[in-house]
Image 1 (cartoon, rainbow, N blue to C red):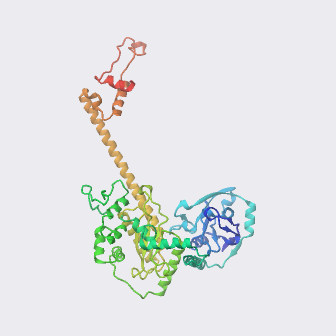
Image 2: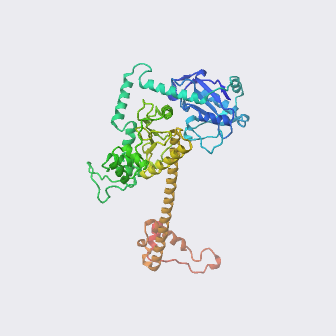
Image 3: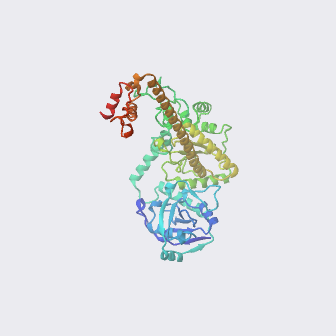
Amino acid sequence: MVFYYSIRGGQCLNDSKDITLSSDDIICYVGRDKHENEHLIKYGWPGDCWFHVDGLSSAHVYFRLRNTDIVSSIPVDDLPPDSVYDMMQICKNNSIAGCKLSSCKMVYTPHSNLKKTFEMESGAVTYHSTKLCRYQRCDKDRQRVKELEKTKSKDVDVNYYEEMKANERRIVERKKRQRKGGDGLYDPLQEDIKATQQKATRQGDNESGLDSGLAALEGLSFAPVAKSAAQPEETDGGMDNVADPDEPQWVQDEQSRALEPSDDVRFLRERGYPAKEAAVACNTIKSRVLALHKLYNPEYVDASSSDIPEEITMARQEEKEVLLAMFGEDEMATFGDIDNENCLDAALPITAYEPPDRYEEPPPLMLEVYVDNGIAPMYPNEPPVLALVGGGFSEGHLRELTDRVKAEAAEKGANEPGDPQIFNLLTFVGEAADQIVEDETAELEAAKKKRLEEQRAAATKQREADAEKRQKDPALVGSAAFANDAERRAYAKDIVAAGTYGKPGGNDGAKKNAPRKKYHTGVSDQSLINDLFG
C-alpha cells in the first residue's frame, strides 16, 4: 500500500527557471515498509527524485512529475524550494527516530543514482556517486506536517511495472516528435544545428557520436612502440612520433597506435586487443565488427538468422525504449539505428566512472554493445558482444575490463536467461573500472614507497662512505669531501658544536686552572666557521 501526498509546487531554479509546477503536476508517494520500498526502487522512473533521512531509518519518499510528455525530469538542484521543503517534512515525519528530533539531516538524489546489490537487505540502498547527492537540514514543522497529513491518501491497485513502461513509451514518443519537428513552430536555426550534427556524425569530424569516441581514441596497448627512441620516425612536421614516457599510459598507447597502418587493427587495439591478435583477426575476417566478435568469442561461428522469435523481438524493443529514455538526450550516447525498434547496437557512456587526475582528462569511458546483423541474434537469450573504449585506461586494462564484463554477462545470462542485461552491465562496468583504478593506485603507491626507501638507503650508504673517506684522509675535510654545499655547512655546525670557545676552564670554579679545551681538525676549520658566521 503506497501513501500519496499533495505537496506544493512553484517556480523551478537555475536552468529550469522557465518551468513552474503546480501541485497537480507533482506526484509525491511514500513506501509503507521495507518490502514496499524494495518494490518502489525496482520500478522507479528515470526522472524521479528520492528522499531519505540521512543516517537513520525512514520511509523512501519519491518526487515524480505527473506529465512527462513535456519534460521527463528536473535536475535535483532545480526543484522548487517549497516542493523540497514538503518532501523533507514528509520524510522526517515517516522516520521512527527522525520524527522525534527537532532537526535532522536529509539526503535526496535522482532515482537513477540509487545502487542496489544482491547482498543488501530489503529496502537498503547506496549510491553510484555521492556527488549526485544533496544534503539539507530539516527542522520540525508541526503545522506543515498537519497540513500535509490531511492530503494523505492510499492507492492499493497500482501496476508499477505498467506505469513504468507507459512512461518510457511517452518519453520515446516525445523525443520522436522533437526529432521530426512535431513540437512547436519551425525553427530554421535549430534545424540548421541538427543538420550540422547529423552530417558530423556521418562524416566523423571528431565532434559527435560514436565517431567522436573512435577519433578521440585514435590509438590505446601494451604493444611496443614501433620505433625506438634511438630510431625515431619523422612525421611531416619533423617531430619524433615516439611515445613520451612522461605522458599517461593511454596517451603513450595512442601515440603507438598512430603508427599502425591498418585502420581495422587500430580499431581493435583501441578496444584492448594486442596488435598481433588484431592483425590475424583482420586478415581472416574482413569486417572489423566480425573480427571483434571473433576476438571476443573465439568459438564464434556465423549465426546470422532471419527467424527470430517474437518474444525476443519484443524484449529488444522494450529494452531499447528504456535505453532511449535514459540516454536519448545524452550527446555521448549513440544508437546504430535509432528509428528501428529492432536494432539494439549502441555506444553508451559509463556515467558512474570518473577517471583520476593522473589520467589528465581522457576521453569518456564507453561501453559498446553489438547485437544486430547476426552478432547476437538471440539476445537477450544469449550474451551480446561487448567492447570498451576510452576512460584513460591502457590497452591492457581495457582488455582486463572487457574480460570482467564478459564474465559478468555470461553469468547473468546463465542465472537470468531472457532478462535484459545492458543497464546492469553499465553499472557493473562503472564498479569494475573503479576497482581497476584503485588497484593501480595501490600499485603506484607501493612502487613509490619502494623507490623512496631505495633512495634513502643509497643516500645513507653514500654518507657512510664519505665519512669513512674523510677519516682516512684528514686533508679531504674541506669542501672536496662533501657532495654538496648543504652537507659541508652541516659538517661545519658539528665542528662548532663539538669545540669549546671562550675563557679557559669554562664556568666551573673547581676547574678554573684547567687548560682550555681545543678542537682542531685541519686547515679547513677556519673556512667552515667563515661559512657559518661570515
